Length: 268
Image (cartoon, rainbow, N blue to C red; front, side, top):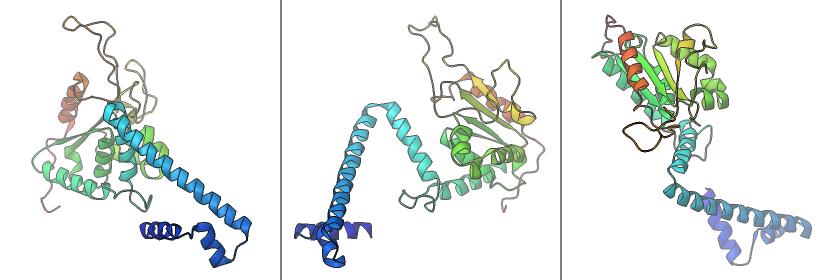
């Protein structure tokens, strides 16, 4: 509809009937109203041109900068996670399909044994949403490992009605708080979910939620290691799965799964 309207406007403008002239003919407006309409039209054309130019510049920057690509990917994930009823001009929502399929896959895997879900960055949002859709019979065989997670830093702040503290506590309760979240101070996207305490500090929240967050040092050291020639890099948002703390968290969560939990029926 918008495309058809745009084509019609351009066609009329080519034959000498611009927005101002069209307004004068249809509504019999005076010269001042036509001038204002022409001004608004001109401003809109400049804005559209600047947006198009910005997209081109952003594309060039993303082709040369990995950090820019990551930033664009985060914004894209955030925008396309929600249904089109939230933003009707956005691309189709992938969560409407991805979350139910992930929940179905988890349910099938628990019939064979325990499952440790690992979600990095926006993947932690998908895993949390999938956990909220799992049947109760599946939950004793599921644990959650999130890393670089924007669940609290982004979603709980921007969308508290959907992924606020109440929802995050519900996720923890559903899986018996078999949940570990790895985070770094240098991570601009991910962060702590419940408590931003240091390893030698007491959790800032009471109960099992205080045991979820695990802070990782970044960089791992300030001196050059014997087998290297440069100091360890600052990892920021990438990667977490290469950390020893990641492997330790997987082992811990796997050990906390209930081995005696009755596997769910395949019909569930």
